[in-house]
Each structure stands twice: as C-alpha cells, then as structure tokens.
Length: 220
Ligand code: B16
Ligand code: MG
Image (cartoon, rainbow, N blue to C red; front, side):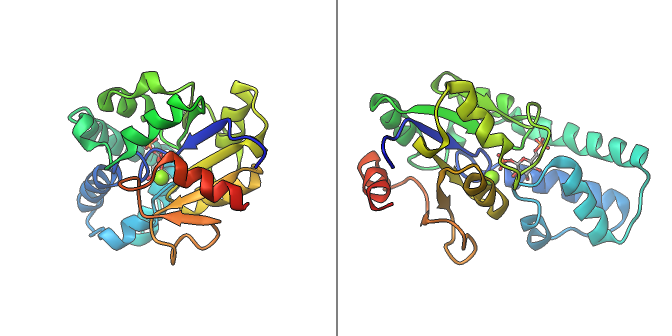
C-alpha cells in the first residue's frame, strides 16, 4: 500500500457484539412462529441484511410467507431489537477498539463505518463514538448488500480517497468478499478458519496497535 488514508469498520462483530441482540429478537420471533432458532442458526445471519436474515429464519422453520407478511415480521423483530440496543452504552465497545480508533485518528487516518445495519447510527450514538467517524455508510444508504462492494466504495467516494489507500476491518465472510471486490485491503476480525479469504486475520483489538497494522500493510 502506498499510503494508508482510510480505515473502514464494520459494526456488528468488529466494534461491538450486537449479534447477541439480533439473536434474542430473532429467537423470540421464531418462538412466536412455533419453532426453535439456535445460536448455530444465528451464525448464518451475521453481516446479512434484515430481509435476507428473515428469509433464512423462515427457511429454518420450514415456513413460507407473503411479501406483506414478511415486511410485518421484519418490523416486529426490529422493534424488539431496537428495545435492546437502546439499553447499550460505551461498556459494550469490544476490548481495545476505542484506543485503536483514536490511534488511527491521531495518525491522520480517516475513519468510516461500513455496516449493513439500518440501526447503525443509533448504535454508534449509544456507544458514544459517532464524532470519531468522518463518514457513516449504513443499511439506509446502500441498495446492494455485502458481498456487493457498495457499502465500502461509497465510504471511500464520500471522502475522495482511492480504494487502494483504504483498509477494511470485517468479521463476516460476505464483508471480506465485499472489501476485496472494492479493491481494498482487508483484515478479518475473528477465526482464521472461518475467514478464509482475508489476507490477514486478527482475533480483536485488545493487543492490536497502529504499528501492527502498518507492519501488515508493508508486507502487501
Ligand atoms: P438491521 P454489520 C449487520 O451488521 C448484522 O451483522 C446482521 O446480523 C444484520 O442482519 C444486519 O446488520 C442488518 O441489521 O436489522 O439493524 O438493519 O455486521 O454489517 O454491521
Ligand atoms: Mg459484522
């Protein structure tokens, strides 16, 4: 990489663990529909849009619904999910992530959010980190879901930064594919066995510093 100008962060699974709240709300919906939804099933929803998540859930339950019914069910789930996220605060930031974001800012790297969630702004607000971001691209702004690169290319475009000078942090396979399709560097956050396509995988930000990132990018 010539020059690191932009770091784009996915939200759920990278900055905070909202997957647990998505799970509670989807499980409640499944129970209301008469079937069980396990944590293993929930893994399939990570990084996936709300509507696609509902379709996967209905597939698990062996149910078919009309578009109108699906819209109502998705809204119901979202109402419950929003109740959970409104209780969040900065204690839910994943270990080390705030220090890492601040370190990037101190080193004049711009920050963008690249999340599939339509609730991303509410979550950033609850976590108290909205002012750190130079651009926020969420599920309300994009028309195509990950693995389409739109959620990441839009962030770079908004800030006038070429994709090759951007690095993406992502926990979901679809997001890693999206970042690669955008022509950006990508660092997987999670398990290297799951995130097979990422050039580098870290377990989190607890012991990952700006110098470590520069070291990785130097090798590219
Ligand atoms: P909402 P990310 C994603 O967030 C979640 O991983 C995924 O489970 C969820 O379905 C999606 O956001 C949409 O969320 O229902 O709030 O619009 O990982 O892209 O930050
Ligand atoms: Mg994610």
